[in-house]
Image (tube, rainbow, N blue to C red):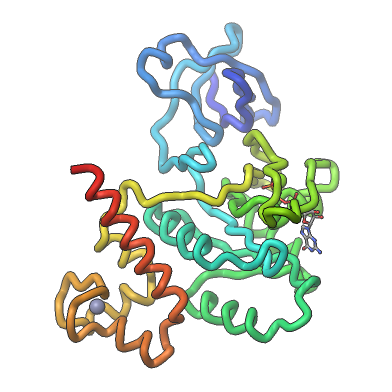
Length: 288
Ligand SMILES: Nc1nc2c(ncn2[C@@H]2O[C@H](COP(=O)(O)OP(=O)(O)OP(=O)(O)O)[C@@H](O)[C@H]2O)c(=O)[nH]1
Ligand SMILES: [Mg+2]
Ligand SMILES: [Zn+2]
């Protein structure tokens, strides 16, 4: 019996990385299928080396559905500033979902080389940085080295819309990877999902997963008050709201709404919050 990390999963076959740096391809023991608990990339598992089967899965610290992966320490939210345009709705959405899952968020901005006027972007950059998120952008000299250091000794995923440059980034980090990249489809301006399966890539002493781009992520499990807490600056301001469980929507005497009016909270972010809140209300309606 040996303990290892699942670094790749393709049609029921799992590549397990062992402490001696070797890998072995295993199948799960038949039992898993009855228990409806499939091993995931990122799972720590026990294996029987002779039979090449996974015998058990260690308890997970967390798991994501999109991408399907377990035990994530950090997520790199990759966003291009242009082609496709900076999608702040998706950024705020992913931030909320990762905050809820208690996964450390790193924001990476790409394609700054294509942006003629950076003024608008810089104010957005500063806003998210001031919230406490670590941000990397491809127009600073140490860009790649800094990202490598972030990955070191952690299990990380890249996430973001198709075409923003996730695979391109990984190829620069590790040129031997040779991941497939593709031009952004111009008709829909949303890329073509060039990446199809999930695999962990060794970077220094850490792991990084390239994932297929995704544009949808929903708030299925999150309730309204919890959503409001995933917006860091709202949570911080909420102690000054009149109501202790203020959701910053219709309540009177709300500090968050005051700060939006004073332009101290990014109004676009507040708009996104209202949209997400609405989604949550709609989901609830449909459930009962
Ligand atoms: N100018 C410029 N082009 C970039 C940059 N990053 C990526 N690209 C280009 O953008 C296109 C899409 O890049 P990919 O790396 O395939 O995007 P992806 O995020 O992996 O997309 P999916 O796998 O579909 O999710 C490619 O043509 C890249 O060459 C960048 O920083 N600057
Ligand atoms: Mg890709
Ligand atoms: Zn409030």
